[in-house]
Length: 279
Figure 1 (cartoon, rainbow, N blue to C red):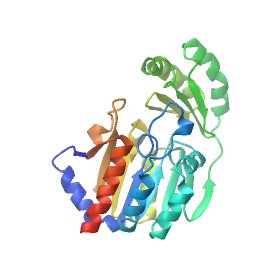
Figure 2: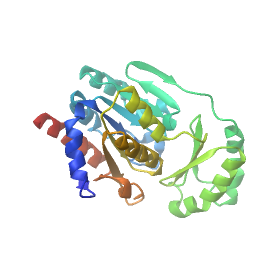
Figure 3: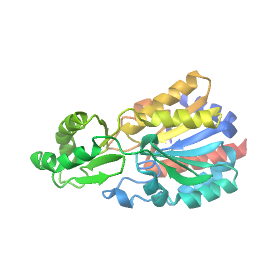
């Protein structure tokens, strides 16, 4: 765990003073789970449940805020079991899927989800021709219900394919009034105007948070980090954590703490619980 600036260690200490009123917000892929070639096999870190269950008695709530569909994350993260463990410690688990379009929580285990955005079906129908034209017809197209993700990770030169596809995918999305979220060798297309920062603001208000820790790894987490700055202006104690990788360094400049992938995130959660118990 590396503090990135002179104030970061103080922010860690400040967060501990309000930990019982703090929300722990976490991205899933690249933060709680490793990035893998097949996104349907990205299981949660084997020690994540234990780390969160140990931390749970000390915090106001735990929120997983992800671009994935909620149903996928419930399965990949075994969130029913995690929700039970957190509830036994007096803390509720919240899940915001598809950047906050979907909601699920330990106390209400049904997924609340809107209708897919207009234009998404037409976008999907046009994808095969675009991918063939850009010599990327082997890209994995993941249909998420409310969004579509085009993954280049399985291609021979994933970074080059990503760069080749980003502009034409953006143009096609705009034709159908859809928004684009680039990530680590993936371009996601979805309804515009919804982002993780909105989920951060919602859960902070719902729980009356006095502190907020958020950990993420990719461009989709930037808005969550920015929302923590807004919360700090309102007097909350905040800590921004980057789960860093060689593929994506965008969050490092925004973060107070940098850790090495999901292993580092789990270690940070474990240390936070230890420091809380020592107070």
